[in-house]
Image (cartoon, rainbow, N blue to C red; front, top):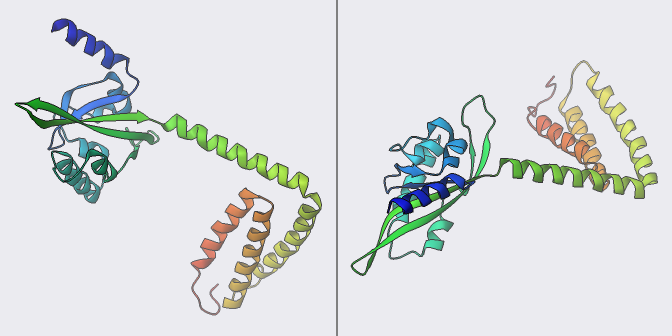
Amino acid sequence: LAQTNKSLTEIMRSINQSILTINQDSTINPEFSSRTVDIYGPQLVPGTSFVDLISDSEGKKAYWKKWIHLAFPNRFLEWNNVVALMPDKKLSYHVSPDHPAKQIRLNILPIDVEEKGQSTRQKLMVISTDITREEELEKKISNDGRKNQMTITLLRSRSMFDDYCAETQHRFRTAADLFNQESLAKKDVEELFRIIHTIKGSGASLNLFPLTELCHQLESELAQVPAAEGVF
């Protein structure tokens, strides 16, 4: 038994994931992998609520508690159906306010024990994987792909890009003239919106992603302007 416990301890130390178990009341049991503390930080304390650890809002905490209660023996639901109802399969978790959020993928499995021919669910195993770096790389690859796509489009459509630049400069001058007025009326705001929308639409056809995203933000700002004459 001592050798078995030693082997299990060594395995738990070598695993590069957080593995812990929780009870039906969501309390954390004292046995967990060494990676668990690295991921969740000093807030993780055996005997405290896992739900309180991963959730800030009372609404989300209530949802998790209901789900954990559901996850214990339920003759109406298969485990795959229980998992489908999980409140979150990925968390944005802050070890402390001074640290950037970690992105954590959750996988939860039942721990059942056979007793006298009957299966009893004793605990839930929570497997947490820090995917922060993975998501950062995916984002970088996505951004690099967008840049490459934009470059290829511009190389293939040079004359179209030149025409777009000339038209956009003219539209920018029109927008600048509107902003230089002493006040902006409703029709001026509508004209600015139209100009920005046109720049965005034409830019999208050339895969000018940074410009189209900026135009989208400007549209959102203009949409907040009150619909009245002489707003500025």
